Image 1 (cartoon, rainbow, N blue to C red):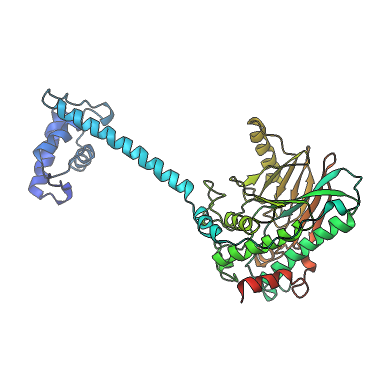
Image 2: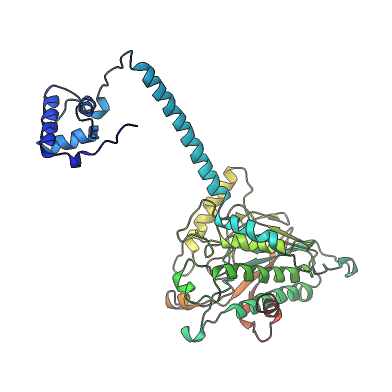
Length: 445
């Protein structure tokens, strides 16, 4: 094995003077830098001498210049004796390039198939025991419906389970903790059931679309949230999955069919810096939805759909919907009017240009406000949060909308018909105790 060459930094002074003298001679003789470097490698076999070495030493020694630049330099043709060795080297270079290409492909494949979210799902889901089932409704015993069948839509976002907002820090304007989160989820579920069965008793509801657009737990990417979180990240994911599973099972007892669509948000991403590669899979919401799916495996009238992309485009009663969290939309003052309009227009162009239907309804979360706005075609539907006002919204934005999630009907002819912003401010942990009791039995024994 040949001895490793040293850099010229450790070259003795006399030898360095000889190197400079040789570079000056070669420059004066019309040699190119490539030719000079090749010759000097032979004359100084103990040192690494490249084209950059020749250029830099020449410049420091008095602006020694060469007639040929590197891009236009010529290389001495190989002799017949050198050709066999060069052919062997060229073959080896080709083999190494192929090996490098293969290793890069394997590396990128491992990144795609082995995100933290996917590893957690592979580790957790096989060990989950399904919940006991709830009997679905016996629709044939109900009074015959005269109206056209229609579906109902529950749009959830920003549960932020695990976060704590202390009333003392918000002048009593905001309050939130896991007990309040559980109470508000129960209040929303019970309100949806009451609205469907009492206030719209004459309607012919068949299917509930439970669309969750993410930020189900507090997460761990924001330092100020980590300071007050009630649970570490792993416990947040498990507790939140059970809370959503209990809520979905309760709804499945009152609707013939329930489809939960789970779209990821931004609070539960596993990297601080926002990323677009594997955005859905490398996210705690992804783990939560897969856990919910496993918990409800025996509930036959529930379907859990988890898109590979950070959005979903279901067709509900013949109308095209587009659901996403909304973290890619830029805030404008306290609501993103301008950028939402741009997002809808640009995304619709992308979809239609590639053969997808033009969405009529656009569902978002992220901004903790219920907002419905008419578009030239269809409308956008923003749902709120379960958290309500917190230290950031009050201190930074001087705003604090009440905790509210949207509930709406979807009619085959009229599209989105009735709609209710269900205000969860009235939820009381002393009254809505069903999910708290289940959590205590499951986790706090």
